[in-house]
Image (tube, rainbow, N blue to C red; front, side):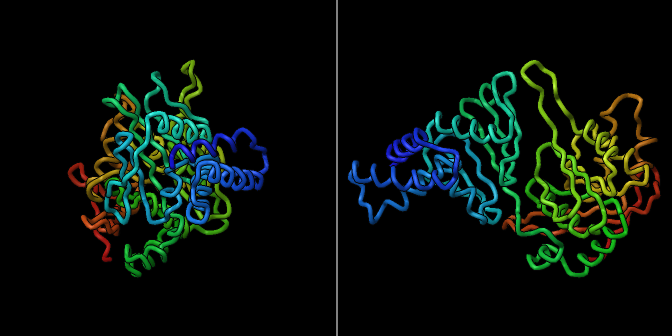
Amino acid sequence: MKTLVESVAGAVRAQLGRDESSVAELVREQTRHHAEKFGVPIALKEEQLGLAVLAEVHGYGVLQPFLDDEQIEEIWINEPDVVFISRGGEAERIPLDLSASQIRNLVERMLASAGRRVDVASPFVDASLPDGSRLHVVIPDITRAHWSINIRKFSRTITSLDALVANKSLTQKAADFLDARMRAGSNILVSGATQAGKTTMLGALLGCVGASERIVTVEETFELNIPARDVVSLQCRQANLEGGGEVTLRRLIKEALRMRPDRLVVGEVREAESLDLLIALNSGLPGACTIHGNSAADALNKLCTLPLLAGRNIDSSFVVPSVASCIDLVVHCQRSLAGDRRVAEIVEVTGEVSAGSIVTRKVSL
């Protein structure tokens, strides 16, 4: 089947025009021709073969059905024949056997759409796929022997707090509280572990923003799906082959402030860009971001630590009071062992600092 698909795909590419409808027609013609030539039962296999060829020519080959499946949250490849998916928060290995060349070709096609590259000089890459999924690739000799690939998909159906309530990830009382605070311009920090639903929660919160507000988002790679009228999304850029042209999160935050934002959103803070975010929020601009943390308290402590990476002239005597005065709420997301995602706690920051720690109070959910 694999050889037949590759053969038909090669024939289609040789005749491929620019019109998308012609692609489907060519696939049908070449599928029938090759099915008859190789003795494939037309009634049983032609439709299946045609879909496989179309995915190979116009999509991402054998991975396309998994990308199209809305129930699948993530796909990762450890080795050519060791492929996993996550469905409903549960990991499962799938019977997919790729070749090393197939994997390289798939990655090259994915990166071509994002204008990014991966090579010996730059062995890591993050990229956003056309459907909004996030691609992460690591190649040898950083990995032991094989290309490591992760494709994280993001929910396109959950774009509001009401949807989270319907999904039992949030109570109606908590949703009403968060909606009111977002409309009032509160600065919100969304925390949680990997795959806890931070990006989905941030997108749902931004769905509460008034229609007249202009939102500017900055991310390492495009992930947020914001249902708003006036949105500008910015993403980082890796350095070119000559080592120039890199655009960092710190630079993007500074540029975003020149774009007349009513709300500044940082997809995730990991390093010194947290200092630039605090400075922006301290100027009175409402904002939101996500951060990795095991609890709301840990998230606040981490946000007090990350700005110290910006340089020796930054110390906690400046950072801690800044965080206390900037951040209004922390929404902590959690994923259970069964794969369910929910809001575990909401913490309100009082603005006070006691014995070097930020004073908070829990909000009843």
